[in-house]
Image (cartoon, rainbow, N blue to C red; front, side, top):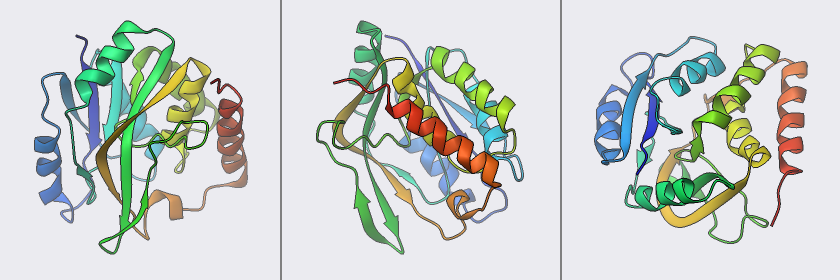
Length: 205
């Protein structure tokens, strides 16, 4: 079976230092190669560019350390099997839940992706699709702070199918100071939203 390169950007300061090592431990799996990516102040896109370029495995993904938690890695074998055996599959992703103030505020669904297309952290994507797409985004708007990960996961539709697995595998903690609360310039915002909207037009049952 092929391997998966998964990176995590170490958050600056010491607030989440305790969770970084815990996340690395939770990520342990024979098919996973972990990489620590460098934080880039004020530039999420550049940090992701560096992170996704680490390693040489055919599949890539990411997680975060700022309170998030990997819940399950048993599904990775099946995800890699699907990608190895079917070139029409561009990405495979598990279910996830979001928490705020220690309360679950959202759980992704397990229904057909036509109704619930919710790729998130731990989406396993093909490197050959991610790197050129990320480079194009970086060239157009190099200081993007919001949406780069969602642009990549939804952008995988441009290359094939996204397959959801009914496994609750990730817990994402929402923070009031997260990248999504950052205001980016209107041109960058419009570009990101248009890119995701166009990606969704590639969806096929």
